[in-house]
Image (cartoon, rainbow, N blue to C red; front, top):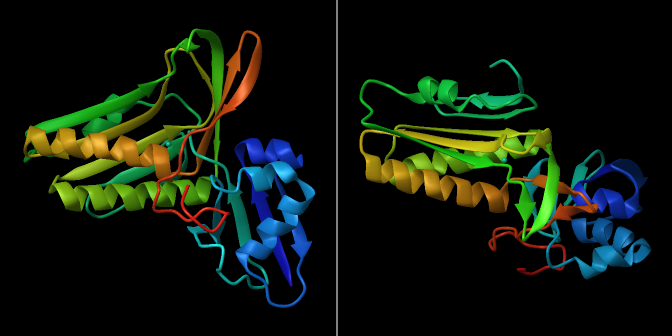
Length: 242
């Protein structure tokens, strides 16, 4: 059977490709696919406790069976209208998007606000000019786009239900970002401020640990993929938690 394998972030650098189609003999699992590449690239085996696998844009355990025509993604640790490359908007008024243009948080806030709301909380993640004293020139974000916006929507809807807030919006920027630009915004509209604050905080925390988006930081003296941590509920390529 034939399957497509996708690589993101630093994994793309390790294997020197973004994707390829491979042939598999007989019954196979996601572990079969991962071990195939780990045997060729020992660095992947070393990272197995932090790599997450996806099958057809859904997180999946290493034991998941692989079928002909599947799209399989190897995902390294995550570091998340007009101009939107991907957009999900539902009848409840939530919306989730990716964009390669500057994020207009004020317009997004107006989009979710209604007359019944007593609070609109907007969180923006901003590109700063240094990391631990090392001077930053700019950042570059990439992601597994179709999967990323779907996971954002799942998180946002769960948060809205869990905190009894009105509407949630999440927008993440992709591509090159300059110092001072917003990389992500999370907006919560709610009748009451406490629920809105709590939902916004949970939203950005979960986005940074579960949405397949990666950041490369360019310094005056080099560049590096920024490695964070996956949510600990996701099974890693090693077969267990991180």
